[in-house]
Image (cartoon, rainbow, N blue to C red; front, side, top):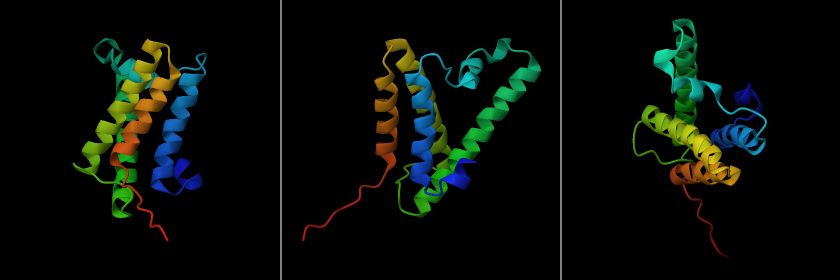
Length: 129
């Protein structure tokens, strides 16, 4: 659905971050339940564990495709394979959720997530006339 509404890969990543930022800012809404469940994977019923793993594979696959497109379009610079960068980005976003909740500071999430995106984005050079 996101890919249908937003075609630019950087904007897709920003929309992904924005979704979770809203969840963090609105303390009454949960953030990624699968991230929470993953921390307890060994204790989960097997059918729940299968679904949690499937979510991570699905998200990783989507992020990998977004990173591949963004790299091909010259929008981001990858130091590793798109899959590895996607896994790193996913871990940073999940960690940013936890940090924001632990600090009680929604701004932490936005700061960390924005820094992660800025870290890979290719700077647009402007020319002065």
